[in-house]
Amino acid sequence: RAFTVRCGSTTMDATDVAPTVDAVKFDDVSESYKELLGKLNTITQLNRCASVLGYDQQVFMPKNGESAAERGQQMAALSGVVHNMKTDKAILSLIEKAEADLAAHGGSDFQDEARLLAMERKDFLKNERIPTELASRASAHQAKAQQSWQVARASSDFSAFESDLSECYAIAKEMAECKRGPDDDVYSTMLDEFETSMPKARIDELFGEIKESLIPLITKVLDSENKPDKSCLTGAFPADKQAEIANKLVKAIGYDADFGRIDVSTHPFTSATSTKDVRITSRFTDGTWREGIIATLHEGGHAIYEQNHPPSPYQIDSALSLGAHESQSLFWERHVSLSKAFWRYATPMMKETFGEGFDYSPEEVYGAVNAVSPSFIRVEADELTYPLHVILRYQIESDIIAGDLNVEDIPQRWNADMKRMLGVDVENDADGCLQDMHWSALAIGYFPTYLIGAATAAQLEYFCRKDFPNFDDLVEKGEFAPLREWLTEKVHKHGSRDESL
Image 1: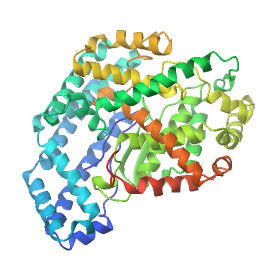
Image 2 (image 1 turned 180 degrees about the horizontal axis):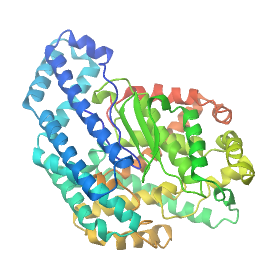
Image 3 (image 1 turned 45 degrees about the vertical axis):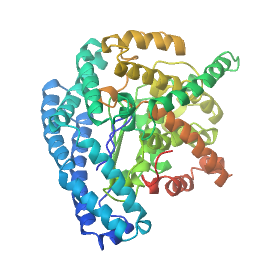
């Protein structure tokens, strides 16, 4: 299948067409496995077509309801075809025959094939519970909802999105009800679509521990009299110059723009239809540069991951989970681009591009980009307050699914929680509950992966520094290749071969 996800990213799909070496060996002894791979490849290619349509809608397509309705019909038709192919009984029959061939020829010799078959069996059994009508309806409504979200966000009017959002939740819940097992709750089933084997009870435990530790630390930092000067973040910094810097930096860390493109969208995201076509978007605001440049580097982390998967159309060679994906974007954002060493590297570039108006030292820039200050916008939040933004969204969506909160009450609940958790007064819906695209894409259960990814990224940095004691020297010199190659060796090339912990 194609690995597709929409995030603060993102629309992302699996990588290129070419079986792994082990898969070719097993082809020699299992015609069923060979035929299965052919069917899975066709499904992946059709899903990649859907990804291109999604990218076009977010970036290039006319922004009006009529165009969105037409695109919705296209997406629904394609989704119906793909769903019928994914739930064809012939798929399950081929899986079963290939499993028998695997047992007959010594499964220990073909571990990748065994893993692929297990993953495809799990997916088939889930997907066959979804009626084709529901799969098509979900795709059509997603196109409609994303357009109405953009309109509502631009006018800062939640009521313009409320009806479509209610339907988003209803459809997502209906799909989870179809997929869930007898012992699974609905929201945990939703979570499993994005972070496998991570039910709500486990996330509650992890997030509770993080929140308990963070709140007193944030209070201590905010009470400090030693606050960084943030004046370098605003000034005569045109959006086109910001984009110029962002593009240079994201290419420097390893994004290969020869096999992608960089565009502007309402919400930053990454879209990969193969390792040879990985696109990123960002957004820039005249006069303030931090969000656009840092968001581009964040999406660059996603893109580097996609460009360094094994070139294959199969699920085993795509990311295991969205937490794994976010760990890659946040490694480059948090642990590289927000480091003091990075700004020793990048500040001269800022001065050269922005001119005399950017007369700041690397240390001043480093302090400003890391300043802790509760804010409205998740993607602009500092490292300490960011987890609370994620927890807020997680708690809201889980309460809606549980029936403890109505969609119409989201703005009131959002604003109250922002005041209670972060001490800020939300003044409008655009800076509040309309800032993220995820719910319009039916990506309910996605938000927790950001915090799981953040925790994973911190652990990756810890072990990367063990292997590279000169980590900071490499960053300061702009020598990012060793770090990128380390991530490929430790994470990228493994795809989904290992199960989630």
